[in-house]
Amino acid sequence: MTTISDTAETGRFLCDYAACLLRSGATCIRLEKNVQRMAERWHLNAALTIMPRNIHLSVCTRDGGESTMYMSPAGPSAISYDIVARLSRLSWDVADGTVDVGRARSILAETERTPAAGKWWVLLAVSFANASFCRLFGGDCAAMAIVFFATMAGYYVKQTMLAAHADVRIVFAVCAFISSVLGATGSLFSIGSTPEIAIATSVLYLVPGIPFLNAFSDMLDRHYICFFSRMTDAVILTCCLSLGLCAGMSLMRAGMF
Image 1 (cartoon, rainbow, N blue to C red):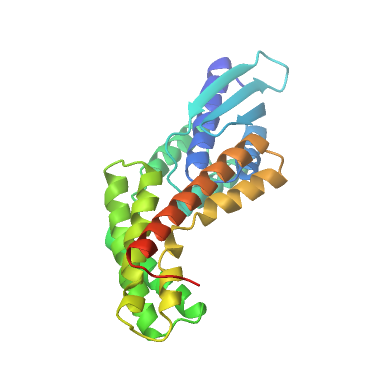
Image 2: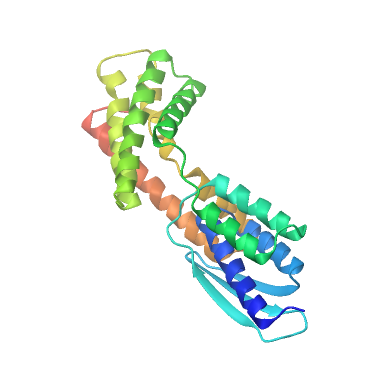
């Protein structure tokens, strides 16, 4: 039989678990399914309310005991599919009965301390990926080289500014400006045959694709508050990106048309 103390410990864990998933970039439907999966295993009824910055969870025993409400702040978003995958695996381990509440709490704490991928490795990987986008859009080798270095410079500035806790909107505008200025060097110095593609693709690494995808997922699942919040954030970041790109092109007198 589930005791009051057991229910309180389990409810607090489920709420903290959902908050960690939310700030790691999980969709609302994933939060609901994972939490319900574990709650059913522990013979609890759980009602989850997902807000853009907070998780509210109501838990009660299946015999109709007193309901208890928990709240956990999600905190700043730090998208990590590694954490999302590990926490999803944890929910299945709980459902299979191989992990109890105490062990699940320990795994959650360990997962939250997961170190980010190496700064220099990510910088190099993003630079190569954006240069590949340039090639996919028809850029020549010169354009790819320009995009590679423009991305490397912009992403390094992004890493540095975010580490200093700068406003992410300012970060996007500044990085787009730097990358577009460097991306326009092909047009300025007549390097290669596709300088316009270098300019256009130099800022693609800043496009907030994950927030857009998560927003549409939340819309389809009728989580409209989270949909509007995530979509608004994504649109604002895209506008900041565009402002930085236009400022850089204006400075370098590089026209797209």
